[in-house]
Image 1 (cartoon, one colour):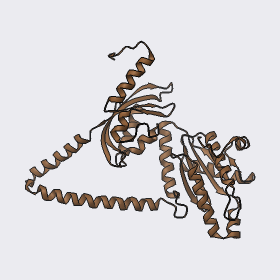
Image 2 (cartoon, one colour):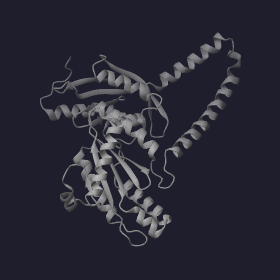
Image 3 (cartoon, helix red, strand yellow):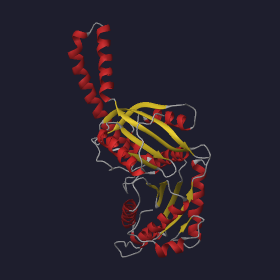
Length: 358
């Protein structure tokens, strides 16, 4: 490798590097697999129209910006490279900008360090804006097609038809998104439903295997909820379910996935959380829920079961394990978290509902 700079100190080197990253147009990224941190240059944020350092510094940010139609192709290429199946990583795809439009980019990267077991330790790369180039190529292809067909004189008419069709497609896409959103939302609590939960859990298992991140699943239900319905009526019961859903939604991370499984049962997916950390998170939720008072000044408690994904687990394996732990939590007296870690009492003494940075 040619050495353009030779600095006398690390501080001088850092100053030069940061100055370069601040002025270059390309969006430079640096992924540390062992800490799960992705550092991105100011140019990366400016290219996509986001405020510098606004987004989370992890791979979830990147994956969520990839156009849904391009996502499978990008992940296939990425996995082939980090597994050693191919010698290079270079691909073109669309990334979502801050205004929800999409920008064509060229993404290139290289592995600069591996762990002793051969897995990726560090990878660096850059995103380059190729949108105008792609648009020009697309326009050229369309014009050539018109020339070949002898229809250049009809270009204006076709352009109008194309515009109208694109507008209709946009309206159709909006309707499809609305229908899909409704089909994935529980109508009572307005959180994700069982269908969307199962889809998301499959995605997170794939992601956990890809990045070798921990993944934990929690399931909880309301203790003696049938008695509440019988005594106060289903309207009061429905109101409690809605309020509990809001409490949990406000007190989990943006990357966590919260859904209603059915009845008074709920599930939470905790990406990148170990069993112990997820246990801590659930214990904090349990305390917050137990302090909630219904309209009848009645306390509500919940029992939790927590299990961590293990290599080669199927969705059914993981779900059966967490379901058994919820059952054990009930058998042990309810209003507690069971995950095979006997730390619930210590956590309940030290946890605070105002501090949820798990």
